[in-house]
Length: 387
Image 1 (cartoon, rainbow, N blue to C red):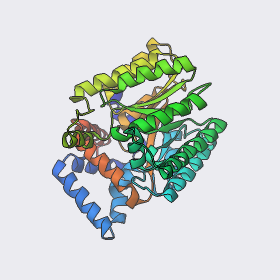
Image 2 (tube, helix red, strand yellow):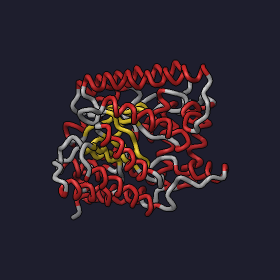
Image 3 (cartoon, one colour):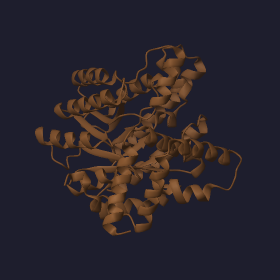
Image 4 (cartoon, rainbow, N blue to C red):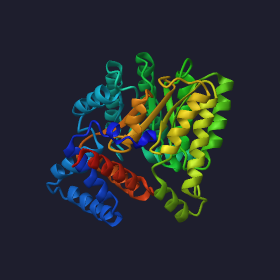
């Protein structure tokens, strides 16, 4: 039996009723028109304040999220860590805010999570999105090389100050920070800022991590150039590597505005790109990798690369990551073999987390084979338990 086929290990933490709920949910997600209709109906119901939060909580929210607050997540974090040896990354998944007060609120939230990480061995990283700390349009304007007004310059200084505040605390408490990637047309500003943070705070090891979305065909060149600069200046690189989360949006915008799409031409090209990136990181010194992947082949490759380059399974420079509610067959079987594994555990008010949940559902329908793989594994485990 191949490592990831072991459903007994994969679903050991799920009760029979949780297993049944997961099976029901993935059956629903498999139906693309139903996902589209469900997303539209849910958005409408929340907009007009229909009492649907309870229903959302008991189904899709509880499957993919840890709770409404950090404290809500603690029983799940402890259960995964104590019984499955799987760590958690608390992900405050509230999107699309653009007021200074919400940026300052996000900063306080992340600082609180850094404290959590220091206290709990089960939470090895803190994470945030660039747009948690500043306006999307401001990143976009800087990425496009446009002149900022005096007011915008002051606004950008406040954005930078939020990053520095978190980084200083993270260095002091020895908690690495994952900074997520977003849409390509705002990402250059984020990349430049994060690189300057790496130069400042990654002197001895990787504390600040950027994210590479490998469905972008330019990311390998970016990684190589970054490594060259880091070698010259003497800082460590921390990199979370993922395939990416905004593919449809990226292609639509490129078509609409008439520029070449930044996205690889197909899934195979993305997979090749992803594997090249993790190999490059593993073979070069002074680089740390958080591999966000739901792909079995890439996971096997990474295990082989660790062996090839003499990196221990529990070396802190190598982590595997999956989303909570997905790919348990990868997470728990890897952890069972002694690898460092973390689940991204989203939390936040139900209403505010819905854009994240809808994206998850749409992603699952658009990634060929993802949902049917989940369903087959759940079926196997139901049969094994004689449900």
